Length: 147
Image (cartoon, rainbow, N blue to C red; front, side, top):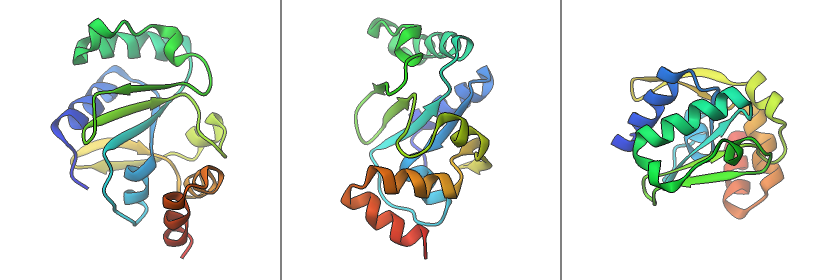
């Protein structure tokens, strides 16, 4: 799936700053064989003080300085920071359903997405996540992933 200019720049910043992250959601689904439209790029970030510090600096550089992001925004579980609007929105999450953060990072897969090196949620973890979320779209995604 092609990446928007904003998504490309954001992923390049994550990589250049050494942020510990994993791409989840529809982009992960596309990597594992089922491309579909999405209006957001969902990224799981590890909730550590160092990662949070880097992310706040990165968000300020990326154009969100006025939004007042704080390290605590990405240090607590079950948090989501939304940047921008669809079809170019970026969602930063600190946890996902059905998979612990440690499992997500242990199963991540190195990949190249539109020429950018990235980390993608592993297929088995993605299946567990989709099953746990259980929305109609997630259940449809499961059928493809498990076939």
